[in-house]
Amino acid sequence: MVQKDAIVIGLGISGCAAARLLAESGYSVTCFEGESHIGGSLFEDIRPNGIRVQTRGPQVFHTESENVYQFIKRFGSFFPYRHRVFLSYRDMKVPLPLNANSLKTLFGEKQAAALLSKMESSFPGEKRISVDQLINCHDTKLIDLGRFMIENILTLDINKKAGSSFAPADDSYSNDAYVDTGSDDCYYTDSIQAMPMQGFMSVMEHMIDHPAISVYLNTNALSRISIHQDNSTVLFDGIPFRGPIIYTPSLDKLYKYCFGALPYRTGKVSFQDIKTDFENDCAVMLTPNNNDTVRITESKYMTLQNIDGHTSLCLESPYFSASRGYTEPFEPEITPESLELYGKYVTLAKECQSIHLLGRIACFRNLSIGESIEQAIDVISRL
Ligand SMILES: Cc1cc2nc3c(=O)[nH]c(=O)nc-3n(C[C@H](O)[C@H](O)[C@H](O)COP(=O)(O)OP(=O)(O)OC[C@H]3O[C@@H](n4cnc5c(N)ncnc54)[C@H](O)[C@@H]3O)c2cc1C
Image (cartoon, rainbow, N blue to C red; front, side, top):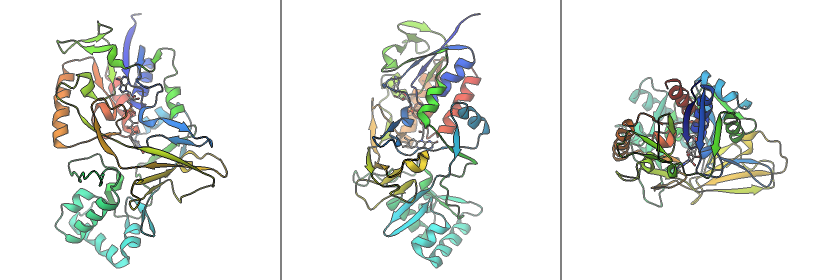
């Protein structure tokens, strides 16, 4: 039998899923990860009190794809989970995305009814209205609601201190940027929402635990892999490599920033351990009135850990722009200009048939965990 070789660059969830799928398709897979650990955006740590925390902020598995759920469940058991996010505004706490209940609490019954009716006539048949739609419509009350959301809810994405403004072309905003005209308090709408019993790190470790997978940590893949000047050949340690290369970091690095650096956003996260059972009423709280911390996550709600008398909070300040070699991009900063720049790199990458882009950073798209796995399944099945 002829040995088939493949390379995976970056071991976040996309790289781990791809490595496993390649190994199960008969490839011998060599994986490179720049950090001293796998996990990427989904990396987790254990606090001194034993509580497992996600080091880049809250992340929940949600998907509409039974196929994706069946795949991830092979590597750990999951429990059903309903994610609840609240906005703490003055002395009120209201569910996000804003819904009929939140509008009632924030603005009173009469005004809430008027806003819902205006949304129904301005956007007939639409259950979720985006902040973009609100600020660009003709109704002054709805425009005001959109402004309220920008000012008080989208604070993670918009760094007011840095003076950055709301960019309507940016599709990387989360569910926070919508108003749900119903009254379900759940943050996500997907039919499958779940969390891993032992955490995402355990799931990813099991994924790459396969005899055909070799892992090299602390290895900048680009010290071993480069594109030949013909643009169509990949060199591995200077020798042409013909097998598939799954590439998950930012694409500008692969081409030595020849068209300029792609913009990404990143964030600052810190932790606080407190001696109490629970500090907040829900997993995630947005706190726009707090200068530095705009989102607080209480991890215990998301891990089901039974640790009495202790809790840990994850505190996040607003995201800021970062590019050029930054090792921890959280999300692409999507604007018409950045998409044009990204397009130039994609055109180059298409000349090289062995390179396959995967995941949120390499594809410059706001993909979820579920979508990243779905993409890996699709790409590997077409090799
Ligand atoms: C704050 C935050 C909240 C989120 N919330 C959710 C959520 O609730 N639900 C959801 O479904 N999704 C959520 N997401 C999205 C989800 O985390 C990502 O889609 C997913 O983790 C991306 O995985 P990835 O493997 O594509 O990229 P990454 O996790 O970024 O992995 C890329 C890997 O490449 C490595 N690398 C980079 N350069 C090199 C190099 N030169 N050589 C070798 N390795 C390299 C990096 O170290 C990293 O490990 C969230 C993301 C963030 C940032």
